[in-house]
Amino acid sequence: MEKELWKGNEAIAEAAIRAGCDCFFGYPITPQSEVPEYLSLHLPQHGKVFVQAESEVAAINMVYGAAGAGMRAMTSSSSPGVSLKQEGITYIAGAELPAVIVNCMRGGPGLGTIQPAQGDYFQATRGGGNGDYRTVVLAPSNVQEAVDFVQEAFDIADQYRNPVVVLADGLIGQMMEPIEWHDVPKRDLPSKDTWAATGLHGRKEHHVINSLYMDPNECDNFNAHLAEKYRTIAKNEVRWDTEQTEDCELLITAYGTPARIVLTALEQLRAAGVKAGLFRPITLWPFPEKALHDLAGESHVKAILDVEMSIDGQMIDDVRLAVEGQKPISYLGHAGGVIPTVEEMVEAGKKALKEAK
Image (cartoon, rainbow, N blue to C red; front, side, top):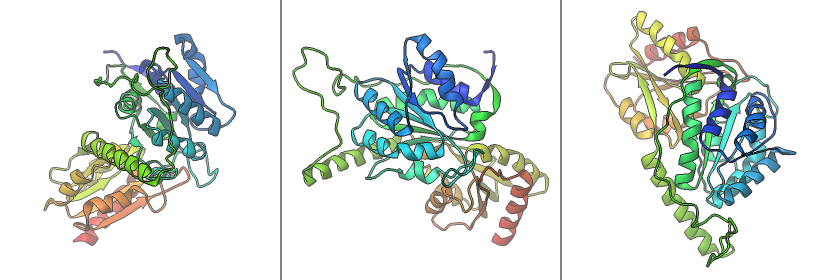
């Protein structure tokens, strides 16, 4: 199959079209503005709906309405824009509606910078809105994965009636890479006729889309139902990747763009006599904690280095929880659009291993 050269954001938008996205509601913000720009031209050509909303708050509530009517609905934004969407996202999760949310992360807090960062890990994996809810979070490390994950996200959302976040730092949205368009695994999806508020005539019962429960026992029971669903997702959807971990003394954990850079650092470390390997979570939630726990428990692993594009780290909390103190963990990171370099990773890796010994 021939490869084509695509810019990340435009490839994400095209992937949504190929996944059967019915409706897109969004608002421009750097560095993801090419997603709505591309969809504004191409989505209507496929007979689908594109709306540039008056705000991020309006956009996510339009997603809520379209998803409630059984449509494949999507929005995209960047960090501060996703912050504005959090109330709508928790409503969507509480109403058990499928939706796809793309976040091309930029530096923060606040307005921060338009450069790429990874400071939204907590927001995505802990839920930035209120209540006990989860979103499935897929983290691509290149444009090909971004394309594949966006297409899969629609099916995952439909299967579990739950929001799915594709979390990519802004560099992935802005870079150009060769990709191939191939079929992604299809799922046996449940019918939406049992719950969607489509207004079809002849229905014997009304379908009400809602997340409000005035009776505390009823709300408690509903949360227990959600928790069971999340346990099913955690069992079925967890993903990760490894490189050269069979004999590694130094285990580096990273996702997104830093994970790409780690691959070069591994080469340099091994050339210098340091056996290094990479553990890359692909689903940030559900986090691959058992896989990381088991790997960290191997006798050949002496130290762990977590690398992120944030100051003190966010994923490192999940790394620590998974490792459970089996091995010492150190950290390397920058924020505000500064990306950790190969040289920094090599130096930090050598230091972590030396201190562990």
